[in-house]
Image (tube, rainbow, N blue to C red; front, side):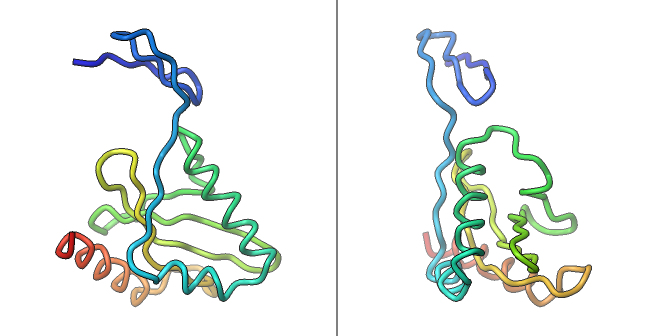
Length: 131
């Protein structure tokens, strides 16, 4: 059994005395995220890149950038504000530190549209069925 402790963004394995940098893996399900990403302006894509890098390298991500969606089956939203727009990317955790990105959209109202949540839930279900 490994015993680990977290030191900021580093992990110290107390069994082997090895210090390693904390990292998450980020994966994509099909082309939903990629299609969304490529439609965005350069400014928005840079902010998405920055936010995903933060998720990858930061053990405790502030809710301003990653929030659990209540009343869903483990869905999270990556939160991005760029220029005059607010954007959301749905994701979930698979096998510990693996984040799977699903679909994204530009938010135009205070509440997240139910159809976007339903789409993300459907994609998550498909992901597990097709593994």
